[in-house]
Length: 427
Image (tube, rainbow, N blue to C red; front, side, top):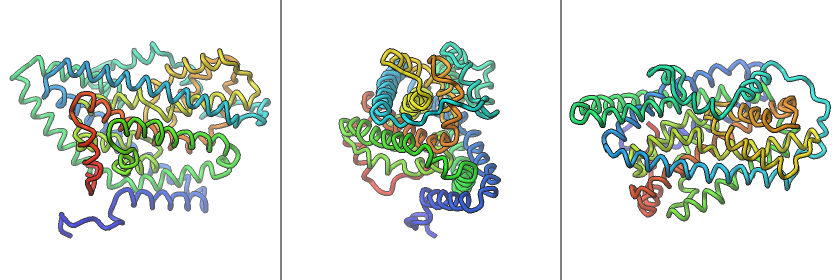
């Protein structure tokens, strides 16, 4: 086939992933034991993507910042991004609290006699109990220069990248060969990523077959009120809140969602937003956002701009209080809000991180028994997908907004790029 020929419908990655998800659901429902055995397919694909994330982010940030050489811009972009993140993360928490208090999905559950936590849920609870804001700050700094790449911690990679970029700027002309090498390495990593992404349907099939095989549809039915309320709230947050932001910026949220549909399908299939991070960065650059802005905003957003996770935190915590007949008056809920604002900063795109931050929140807020986590562990995998999808859209919108504040693109340019077909495919 000629390289310039349009793709047939079945050649699009998002279509292949969608078909793989459907097949995974079918296999998991009909042959649960076999479906659970396919877990390595999903885990393997996520690992393949994660092995590339740290070097991709490093090259993007270093080349983006060092090639511009404007340190004031770097600080300005960082402050604008953090301001945006805090406003909308807090708004997501508040919206979640309002919805769960109005709908009261946990009232009548009467889970007053709670069984002890199983080993897996105990591990989540232990991680949550050990969480603190000072720990988060300290963990931003790796033990060694290569430690960030070994562990794949995005905040650590961002710190190393920022200091490396500053070092290259300080070197002046002597740093040009290193900068060129970083640019070549970035192209090489994107080429490798293009090969890995072709395996996305296999990973999505295995991940979905495991999810349905392990948890089944019974968990959805039993806790349908919480699930339905969370999904509806997340959808309304994207369409109404983020939709208003994009409209004020001059482009359509629906066109933007269509633009990143391949990345959204990756997240849907793997239940991890990290699998879509490199593709999202590539597409934000294609919209006209500068590489330095993309390199700073997108990775930072994966820890500080988690709209879906925040909605989940406030709704799930109050649901567990309702289900266990634990009274939560307004002061307690304000405390919950403040605590969640801190604990949510420790979440990332990894599956289960939202559950860990929920455990951390419950460990600080008195009254809600930690054993109540067992009530929702069965549906957390399904809620994780919605969390990750909402987080991804929120980070994409945040990148465009900050880029607009920096005068890199206009609303008309973004709108025109979104309307242009076909959209650029992920690398």
